[in-house]
Amino acid sequence: STKLKGNEKMMPVDTLNHEPGWDKEPVEVLEIKGVRIGEGRPKIIASTTAKTPEAFIALVQDYNSRPELQMIELRPDYIGEISGKEFAKLTKQVYEIVKNKPILMTFRDKTEGGGRHVSDEYYRDFYFDVLDNGKIDLIDIEMFRNADICKQIVKKAKEKGVKVVMSDHEFGWTPSEAEIIRRLLLQEQLGSDILKIAVMAHNTGDALNLMNATWKTRNYFSRKPMLTMAMGKDGVLSRMTGEFTGSDITFCMVGGKPSAPGQIPSEEAEQILNSIHKAMYPVK
Ligand SMILES: O=C1C[C@@](O)(C(=O)O)C[C@@H](O)[C@@H]1O
View 1 (cartoon, rainbow, N blue to C red):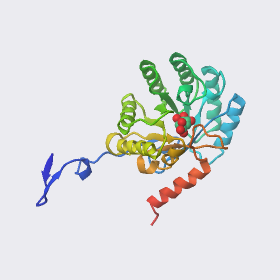
View 2: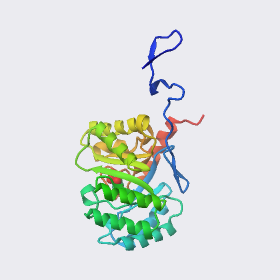
View 3: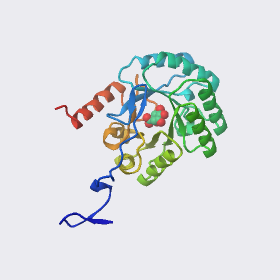
View 4: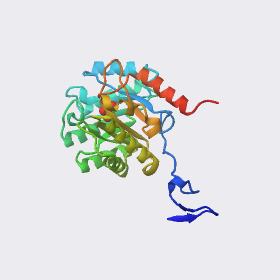
C-alpha cells in the first residue's frame, strides 16, 4: 500500500519505513538464573561428551568452574545405555553443583549427530522420566520425531516449568533459506521458547543461507530467542555472528573435544564475541 507524506512522493508503507506503531516488537528475552537469552552478545554453551556417569559429573564440575561458559548442555546419549530414571538422578546432582548456569538437557539421536539411536517412544519415556524425577531448566526436543510425541513432551515440559528448545539438525546439507525459516516458525507454532536449527555447510553460500534465514526470522517473523548454526569448516563464522543475525546462543568446545564439527574453543570464542560486541557498541 502507499501513503502520501507531506509533499514527498508516494511512499510504500511497510515495516521498513518505521511507521509509528508498525515497528517489530523486540525479542522476548528469556531470563534463566540471571542469564538473559536474547539480549546482548550470544551466550556460550558447551555440551558434555563424557561416556560414564562418573566422568560426566567430573566434566560438569569442570564446566561449572569455567567463567566463560554461561550455559551447559547435558548429553545422556553419550553415556552408554543409561536409563531415564538413572539420568534424572544425575541431573539432580548437576543442579547441586551448578547454581548460576542454565542447564539444557538434550538426548541427541544418532541420526541427528548424537551418540545413540532410540525409538520415538523410548525418547518420550526417557524425557518424561527426567521431567518427572530430575531437575533441568531447558529441554531440547527434535522437531521431526513423531509429531504427537513431540507435542506430548512439549506439554509435559510446560507443566513442569521447563523451557522448550525445539531443534532440527541437517547433518548432510543446508536447506534453502525459505525452508530454514519455515522450520523455525513451525517450532514457534509448536510452543518452542527458543528456536533452533543446525545445518551442515559445504560452502560459504550454505553458511550465508543459514545466517540470512536467521536474520530474516529475527527481523521480520519472530520475537523468540534463537540458536542457529552452520556446522563444518564452512560454517565456523556463523557461530560467531549471532549478534548480527539473531542467534542468541553459540555452542563451543572445551578441552579440545567438540560435540559437532566447527566449534571454536570456549575461551577464544569469549574473546571474539566480546570484541565484536565492543566494536558494535563502543563505550563512549
Ligand atoms: O544441537 C546442537 C548443536 C551442535 O550440533 C553444534 O553444531 O554445535 C552441538 C550439539 O551438542 C548440540 O546439541
